[in-house]
Image (cartoon, rainbow, N blue to C red):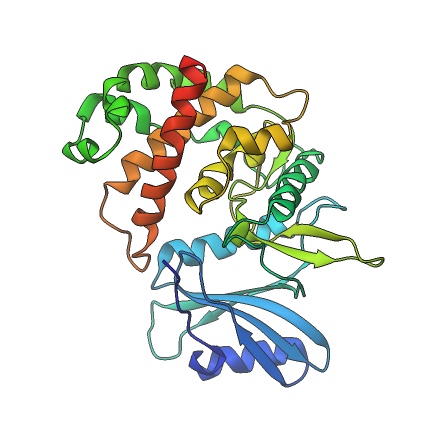
Length: 321
């Protein structure tokens, strides 16, 4: 499911020229970062002024361009001390050849680190990701700022599955179909609103591929978070639990085994966590059965494996070990 991304020479000349002008000097070397689930460029550029990481999307891919704009606003407003690269700038460049198309470029400090070891999972790196989630949640943000409330968007997928019962669900664990009404009740909108409320900073898409492990002075390693378009405020447990389906889907420990190693914050309500697990289960199962969105052909398969990781986790939480 690895995306092979376009490279620096593939960028239109006018976009390259604008980036070079912003850097104040020529690009002396570049590296393209494959992976991810959205179309566009992800590049580390080196110039006489230092290293910078850029993402580029054409408005031909409306969702990607919108997410870049939202990331610019939110990454630029992160509180001091959040383990994340500093945001630098955003460019909006008209396309000289297509009247209704533009290019969105965002830039942040380059992070010289490594990917978390996931093949197989290195438990020390998994611990680093869990501690990263906890460190993010230690920061609080104003409810009237650029960060929306995590509970602003109610996830309807549990109710949709219970009502429609799409034929594709027969390919999943029969327990899911047998308990759709129960899951919809757990994940009811009013329960989501209460469970996810809070002042804590939430990355909202924290996984191994949205983090890098860096070495600090003295030799200790820690994780930092990248890719912040979904940043919001909410309950303290959201990031720490939200990454666990992807961990399990990639061959890592079960969600409960991870939480036994790194417990949730003391203010995490177990019933609220169960609501979130129900929401995640329904979200991944429902969306895995949809057609792929334009430019993101691998997304549905990734959602499928995360749904399969969620189902036994939810069953364990609602029926006991």
